[in-house]
Image 1 (cartoon, rainbow, N blue to C red):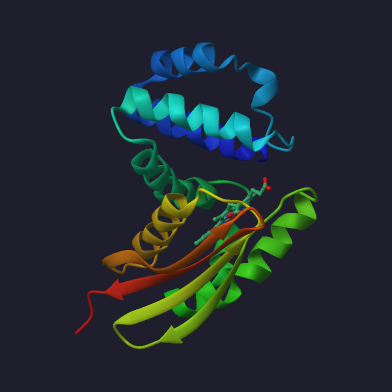
Image 2: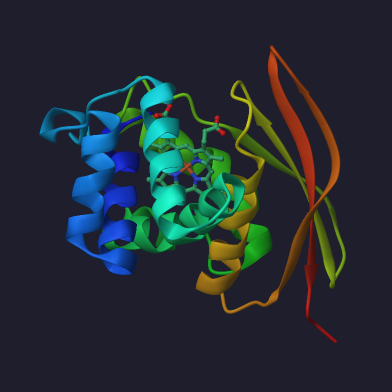
Length: 184
Ligand code: HEM
């Protein structure tokens, strides 16, 4: 993944446990400044190693750390140079999700080697959204849950996210996420 993800993780760890813990994560994973360049692409195994080591320091299972990281990512992106793009993407959940692929396409203009996922809103009622996620990657389910929770935080919604259906194989992943909103 792009170094921007590594920098976001470093920032999350700085916020939670301080710079000295992140230094330990770097040491344990053989990471240095060259692995943290926003616009460089790194093998996903590097990203996973950083998350696993961070999870151990946070005292969380890797899946929980991935979810926290997804939630954190939305706030991190808001403060990055991509903040204005997020504003244009939508001010409510339905609009945002419908524009997410367009938003990622504009990210790809800046980061041409990004392998971004695709999101489709399959069904919508006032209290429930069904969102299909397609990716050539596997293992990021908890990250997506955190991202969707982060979007809810950003757009002043509360609710829960769970997996309604999943197909994951070597060719990639298709997961339908149900967002149950606390609306009356
Ligand atoms: C301005 C905000 C955002 C930016 C700048 C951004 C950018 C990126 C970038 C650079 C990657 C890495 C691709 C790669 O290195 O191959 C990525 C991956 C990803 N993004 Fe976004 N993204 C944003 C918001 C979101 C949101 C709101 C969601 C979902 C609700 C999302 C879902 C994902 C997922 C799940 C991945 C992992 C790749 C995969 O599943 O295949 N992103 N994004």
